Length: 251
Image (cartoon, rainbow, N blue to C red):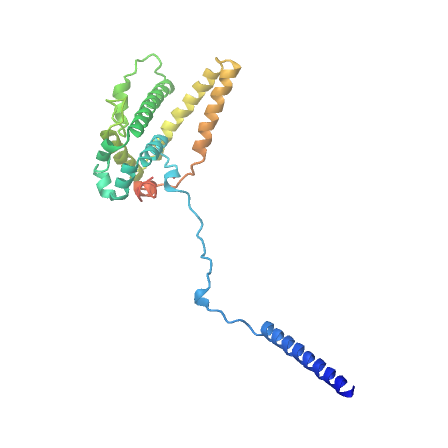
């Protein structure tokens, strides 16, 4: 009997000792700092504040929208985009990239034709607005002659966008941005305001449904244009086209 009691006491002491040792090990693990290999620890990189894409920058040129839309559609063509990324700025200025227009898809060429026709019509409206502001309502306007002042497109062919048009657009944008004439471009924007006045007068002649549709369409266009941030001048063509025009130019 006494032996059995002694054995139970020994077993209890052994179990108690085991629990104490286990507890000590746990406490030691929590107390000792874990050594980490700092070379394997991933530290998040500090991100620089993102700047708006160059192609979304408002250049301040009176033909900014036309320039931007042409660039956007050319970038959608895989062949042209690849050539763009493999052509340096000097070659672009010399017209080597413009020659690649002959190899872009039919869809893109058709859209470029449409953009050019819209731009020619816009310029004709500006010419008319300028004449009205200067009090020449009764004078016949030679649009073809006046269009010569807009060197960024070939006014002799108002219907299709050709290699010469792209060459003119790139060279004119480069030159205009390097020698930015704020007053000149603001003058054309003033004519745009006159055109807006005419638009409002036209709205008065429409019924409620047609007027609502016209105003919704106009508001949509204004919002798209407002999304482009302004930029301080001077800005180079290479600043605008990059990164979309492979570090070339004008956001």
